Length: 388
Image (cartoon, rainbow, N blue to C red):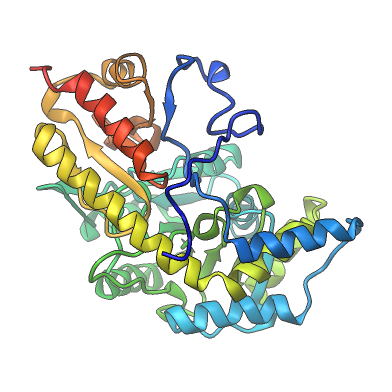
C-alpha cells in the first residue's frame, strides 16, 4: 500500500475524547479505548499538507467557502452516488448533530412526534428530547443475526402518533445495515402518504462493504434533507464541518433561518480547507483505507467465530463499527459492561446506549492498526472464553 495504516500513533495527551477522558468516564487506567466513532489513523497526508499550508499562513480570520469548496462536495457525491447537487442547495454546518438539531427546530413544533428506528445512534434521542419533541420508535426486527424493517409498525406508529418527521440513519449505526433501494422506496411511499418529512443522516455512506450499494435518499425523494460530512470518511470530526443537501427552497430558507438564530455564521477555517482538500485529493487514500478496514472486519469475524462462538458477529454491510451480540452469555447489560471494562479492560459502547433494543450488545470500533485490534480481541477472549 502507498499509505501506512499499521503505524500506531500515540493519541494520549491530545485532549482526545476517545483516549484522554478515561478517569472522567470512570474507566480503569489500563483500558483500551475502542468506542467512539473516530479512527486511529491520521488524515490523508494530502489533506494534512493543505492544512499545514493554511496554518503556515498564520492568519485565521473569518473564512467562507468559495467555488472550489462547492465543486469538491458536488463532484464527490455525483461521481460516487449519482446525486447531482447544486451549490444553492448546500447548507454548511459545524457538524451533523448540530444540523439535525437545527432542522428539528426549523421543521417541527414543540411536542411534534419524530420517528427513529432503534437501536440507533444515541444523539438522535438527545436532540429530540432536548428540543421538547415527542420520541416515537420503530424498532428494527432482529432475527438470525440480521436486521430488517417492520414496515407495518412503521406506518402504524406514524398514524397513531401523527408523526411529522422521520430521522433516517442510512447506512445504519450501530447495526451496520445498508438499506436497499426497495426498502428506502417503501419508507418513502409511507412518508409521502402521511405527509412526513424525511431527514437522512448519511455520514457513513463512504464505507459500504462487499456487494452492497448505498442509495442516496435524495435520489428517491427530492424534498428529503440529506446530511453528509467528510468527518467519518477522512477522520476530521474535530474540525467540525458538514454539508446538508436541501433542494426544496422553503425548507432551505427555514433551516438557514434556524441556524442564523443560533448565532452561528462562518465555519471553522481549517474545516473548510480540510473538506475541500479531502473531497478533491483523498480518494486514493480512502480506497486503501477501505481495503485495510475490510481486513480488520475479516479478522474480527474469524476470531469471534472460532474462539468466541457464543458471541454473535453481526455482519456489517457498512461502517467500521462492529455490532456484537453477547445474549447467549445471559448477562444483564450492567454485568456485561462490567466484564468488558473491568475484566477485558476494553472501552466499548454498551448496547443500551443505542436504546433498549441494544440490550446484550456491544459496539466495537475496528478502525485502528491491526496490532491494536488483535490486542483487543485477545483481551475479549481472555475474559469470555471460559464463561459458561
